[in-house]
Image (cartoon, rainbow, N blue to C red; front, side):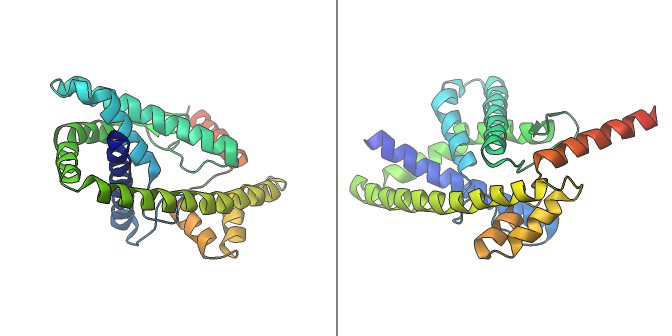
Length: 230
């Protein structure tokens, strides 16, 4: 039970740090504050899951930094790839796309993001996690259990609400896709933006959302450009 509460606490910490990193990166690049991620609250679960996977499988490589670096890259890239794949299959939309970046695999992952994953893995295992683990161990177990239980309830509620919002986005995508135009994503965003705050937040969090039809159009356009260059 103690291990469960500890890992749950670490999940929320890393999910929050991941959200904070995404917000800061967006602010630096776009000069505006955006609540990144699917959830309404300040959490990016993919970071929480990624960090827990690193801790569960890679702590034994703490004395082998090079191995740790590449294994962290592998685990995080697999997580990002299959998360992208599952989200696309479930909601019929590509929520991020690296097709325009070099050394990408199906637009789901790219070398540009893999290297930071490796560095992050090193920092988590060697520096960050020991610090947070010591900090959490200083908190009385009963208090930590109460805090963690409250966060779990809020997290579940947030997931339910966010799922309902994203599910309605899927309906909008299906409606617009019937037109088969090159501005599918733009029209989806316009439709959703009139629905309310939670829907507009989702569009701001994922400005590059694409439907499968538009992804195919992008691929065809890139192929045509390469053929013309030859």
